[in-house]
Image 1 (cartoon, rainbow, N blue to C red):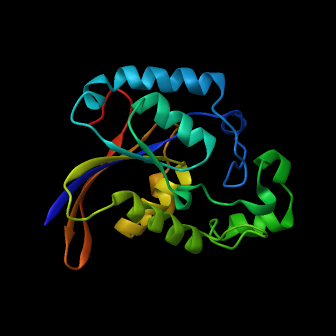
Image 2: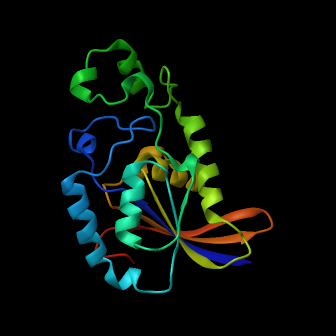
Image 3: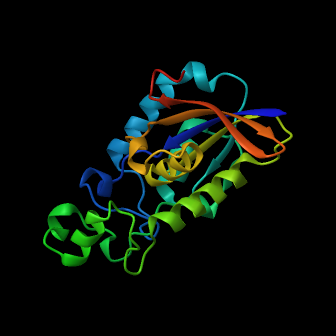
Length: 205
């Protein structure tokens, strides 16, 4: 039975995040200046964590995740996994609540708890499956004991944790540069989630 410690980390802030927009798979914006500074501060706060034995680092291919991974982990080899990208918000992409308020299609989506398929985008069930597939790719060889850092998106983290625990998707909302530490064991019947803990800068345990 192999053991892995996995750190799911949400990327730093972008301009769209600050404006509370739906920034998903089809919007490839970089970190804002504030996001870069916050990621650099997070790296300082995580000095003890990051100075321990090396991580294998994986990330979503979108700029905001790649930039965050490069700031936090510097020269560590970075594997990009397409399925770790954020949800495709379809016709809601790039808009915020104020711009969508009163839109009947948007209100119907909200009324379903964000489960319904978004026109020209994804539904929650399909997004959860894709995110979990990407997470499994990031885990790599189940026979190797290691620490893995996965830098991705808030929605991806929510999807993976809800899939693993059976709890509600929105229970796992996390701020930029927040996330979770997961302890996993690999058994014949699959992945066993031993424990999970919130991860915040300065308090990685």
